[in-house]
Amino acid sequence: MTVEPGLGGQKLIPETLEKIRTLKKYIDENDIDIDIEVDGGINSDTIEEAKSAGANVFVIGTAIVGNENIEEAVDSFRK
Picture 1 (spheres, rainbow, N blue to C red):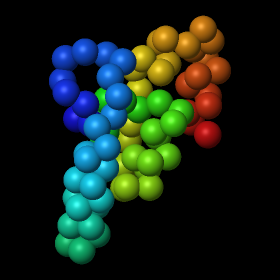
Picture 2 (picture 1 turned 120 degrees about the vertical axis):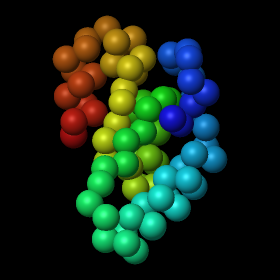
Picture 3 (picture 1 turned 30 degrees about the vertical axis):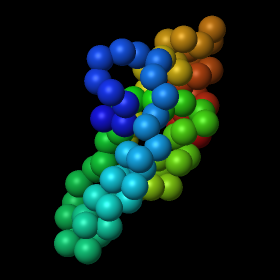
């Protein structure tokens, strides 16, 4: 979780990105085949930060369902 569990629409907690980096480093050093999924605060401003930190699976709620055009929102995140 990259936010406090419970409420949608929260901002990503920046300190969680360092935890992702640490986990990614461990995974790489130990040649483990596993995904890193992040859930919470992922939007068009934070997805690249999370990806750069090492995450490769993203749970995106409010940034999609809160968008007027859900299909367009989903397409933009896929790119």
